[in-house]
Image (cartoon, rainbow, N blue to C red; front, side):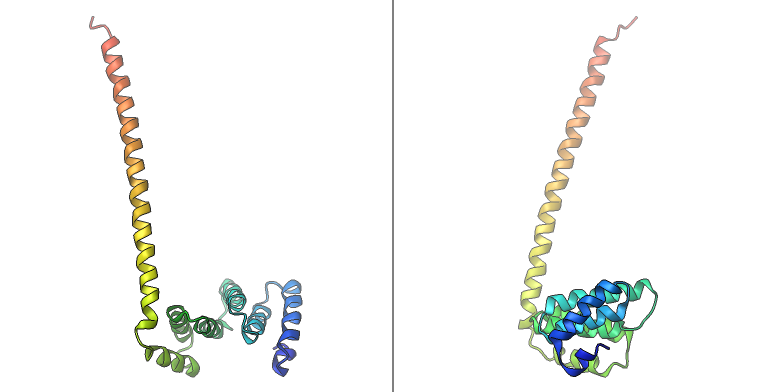
Length: 169
């Protein structure tokens, strides 16, 4: 662990971890500490990106170190940003990786106690995305059908023209 993080000097820790990511970009622990530095500075999106990089590297190396902690910390970031569905999802992934992770269990219990109103906006957003997807898909299919019909008609026209121009005997 970065000693600046341990001492609570998060700005210094961030500077150290920035250098460390340049020196050892494939080292998961560097990205984990980088994420923690951002997390403690309330830079949620940058923390999430650092934890995602750590998760990617750990999975690529086929290790399990840091995975549950990364998902847990991503949950903290999402929760801090008011993104309750992604926080819950992150906590569930952390719990899947480490079923005995007490802090994750507590976080999941807390989120489950939230009123449904916190999830309504997420549901509405997802519904709108599905509607937009359906509309786009219908446009594409319509275009493809029209293109197919045009190609088929022009092929038929060629065939008819060839038949008309072919002598019978």
